[in-house]
Image (cartoon, rainbow, N blue to C red; front, side, top):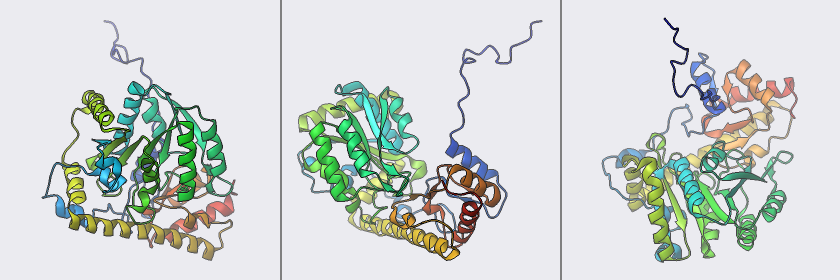
Length: 398
C-alpha cells in the first residue's frame, strides 16, 4: 500500500504559509499572558480607562431605531457642501475603512488610466500597501515623519510630491495620522492642496478618526473640505469603527467627488460592478445604527458630545503620561507625546526596548514603538512609565 503524502495530495499543497501579521501575533501573545500587570498598547481599539471595550450610550439607544440610510458624505463634506448640492458626490456603503479603501483601489485600477502608482506616507497604516497592491497598483512612498524631531517632515513631503509623476494617486490620512500621531496644520494642508492640484495628482483620503484630534467633527474634516472646495476630484474612505465604537459591524463608506453630476452617476454604476463580485451587499445592522445617529439631530448632538469626551480622555492620557515620565526623571525629551494627536503616538522607543518591555513588564505594543493612547488609564500609566524608564536606562534610545 502506498503511503499517503503529508499534504494529502492537495492541489493547494504548493501554497506557502504566510507569516503571521506582527500586530495580530502581538494580540495572541497578549491573550496568552497570565500576568495581571499585562497592558495592551498595540491594537488600535478605543477602550475605557479600565481597558474595557467602549460602547457609546448613543449606540445603545438607537439599536432599536434602525433605518437603511447613510449620510456619510454630509458628515465628511458638510451639510452645505456645494458638491453634494450639485449631485457631484457618489457614496457607496463598504466594509469599514479597509473595505472602502479596497473598493476605491479596485475602481482606480480598472478605470483610472492616468497612473497606476499610489504614493503613501512613510510610515503609514500597516494594511495600506496590502489594500492597494492587491488591486495591482504600484506602491511608492513620500517622506512624512521625522524621527529627529518626532514631527512632520513637511519639506520632505512637498519635495517627494513635487517629484511624483503627473496623475499619480496620493493617499492622505485626513487627521490623527496612524501610526505617528502627526498631522499637517491647516496652512500646510493648503500648500499640499495647491501642489497636488498643480501637478494633477489625485487625492485619496483615509478618514478613520474624525473628531479624535480636536474633538470637533467639522474641524477634523477641514483637510478634505479644502480639496473639495476647489472643485477638483478626490476619493474619501470613511470608517465608523473607532468614532462610533462599531468595530464588529464593519461600517464604512467610499465617496468619490466628481466634476459633474453625470460623471458621478457613471462612477456610481461602475462602483456597483466592482462591489458585486466582492461581497454583493454590505451588512445592514451597523450601517443602520450609524445612519440613525447621523440623521437625527438629537442623536447626532449626543454622539458629538461623546466623541468630544473620548478625545478629551486621549488628551488627558497624553498629558498624564508626559507628566509621569518627567516626574520619574526618565532620560530624553518626551514632549512629542503631548504634541501628537489622535489615538496614537510614536514613542521613540526602538524594537529592542519594546521587546524588553514585553518580556519584563508584560506590555504589548508594535516594535516600532507606537502607543495606542486609548489603551491607557490612570491606573496603568505608572506601570508603563516604570517600563519605559527601565527600558531607556537599560537600553539606550536610538
